[in-house]
Length: 401
Image (cartoon, rainbow, N blue to C red; front, side, top):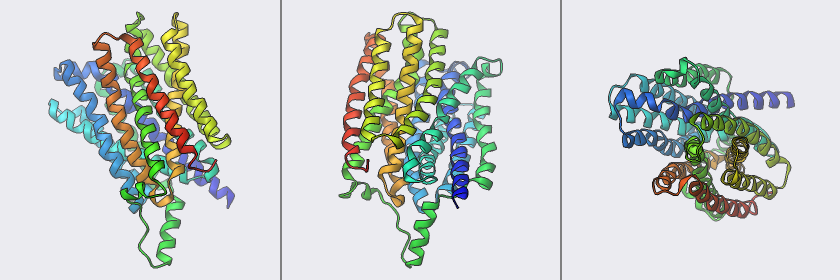
């Protein structure tokens, strides 16, 4: 039985890892393809900004609806359909011929990806025992920086120089993964168990509803999780969107900035796995203090570093903790909610986080335009991290150590 459980967990986490890799590819795709898209469609800077926002905006309804439906009909079905939706509309990015249709397909691709993410977290959480959920989600989510780093390398090749190839890659990879999901991905045993228990009791399957997120048991947990998701993802996307530009603001070359982004992503892979493992082994308050302290240390290092080597080290430090922190927050979503509410709870929290993800880069852009420079952007991220840490420390008092 234990061998069967291990196989179930390994297959589930491995397939979810592959989809997280695809998310990482997509996160980098818009920025890498931006110059080619701008030229092909004749866009100005404002229109290019709207193009960036369209994909992130699509994540919101996807995250809200995907987890909710997964709590109703099952994790596997919704993950397959949401991945297929993402694949189809990512490929359509190559084939559209107007700005408005470009925005539409990016929004719909984002909706598919947004629906998939809370299900990945839920499946990884439910594939293992409660004592191993942090590690499982960390191993799954480290696929995101891996995917982003891979696309950064692809962008340096002749193949990646053509913006259409970026979206062909992003659309065809999930099509390859879909048959693996159909034939090998097991449905969540926790979901099936809850469904069987309800059928044996001859009662309707108990399903989480949005209102349950604010009942007496979950209200404080939900508010703390939402606040932490919002401010942490704000900082995550400031770094993802602006790190290369911050390097050029500080007098380094664009190539230096791209190299820093690569170090950022590679260290993020390691940080996500290690912090996920520590979530299961340490007291959760210690993990919170370590990861938010690490982010603050990295931000101060970015502000104070002088040489290029020091800047690379600071970027790697921020990547390890800020992306690792996002993975831990996703793991907490799987920990704090019961089975029948887990998909809904993680999905809504992810949607709240995506609002922060949209606002962060926009605020950073305004600060740069107002003349505050790279130091101003980095300094503005510090209060966000402190607020997130405080609310997470409140949250850990409400869940088992």
